[in-house]
Length: 206
Length: 205
Image (tube, rainbow over all chains, first blue to last red; front, side, top):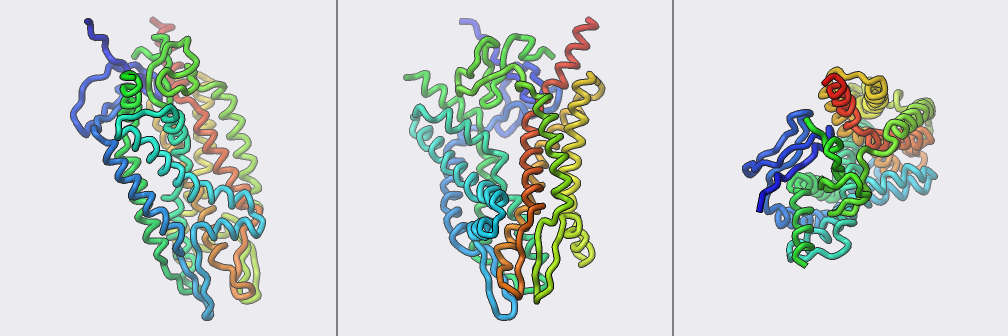
């Protein structure tokens, strides 16, 4: 049996490269345009699965508890992620409400749940028929989850309001920060090619 | 630097598997595959022109109104930034200026420059053009910052005559600008830059 070289094409410049073995933790970089073309991260499925579960746990208090409360002349107003969406919707900024809902709540949740339903079967060496479509959809949604931008927005709002009122960070804010950290760790530990290869090898055995 | 296209292969942009150029669907992940993004130049032009047009009402119309102790006034993106600079929080002012003005404008100009370089077949510094594209792709989402600030302020300041903030139509236009420019950068295909470089080299040889 002759061994044919495994090839990979650079995503950004289409140059073909032969896949060479690299050691754990290293990146292979396109010699033409300097794009990272593949990474050597092994056994990331379990690690990512654990992080996804942690993310789903943090998601609940981050959405239930107030992010900030605002106190002026003895009156207090609190805000959760969802109440911000409702207020925007009520006063007629429907499109803005939809953007905020999608990028700060819906898409992050879909991504976490989606990853759970991709990684859990793979962990048990199963590849249900919906896996390719589901993982593909998660990749498509990747840039549209914006909780790190939202976090910066919270900090800026706190500075803006600090002069006129007392601003108190709620439990929601701390759990939202924890959720943000976990989501960043999920994207760092995910090795897409490992997931695709595992799906392919499970299907090949059937 | 043989490309996948030259080797009659299509790189699946979802899972990175190389497929035969006659295939229409990736054999591993079922994504519809194309040698290059379809109508990339036309779509990107259409989206950046739309984005540039919408950027005007996004800046002319107020993004929010503030009513406090009976006094009320409206803020545009720029007047909001000016206020942040005036109140001495210039770091925050600069962050908002960067996210709301510099990033969208730089994206529109940067993508326009990339499109022109491809169409006029400029072969100089393809590596720098590719890096410019990657930068545009990464920073685009941060433009949404002001929209989130508005969302938070609106939900916190709902105390009737004491303090009320409402979102205004400028915010809708600005949200559209961010979304449309994100679609614009996703529809540009950086491999077109390198196709030109290869074409020129092959022509010479």
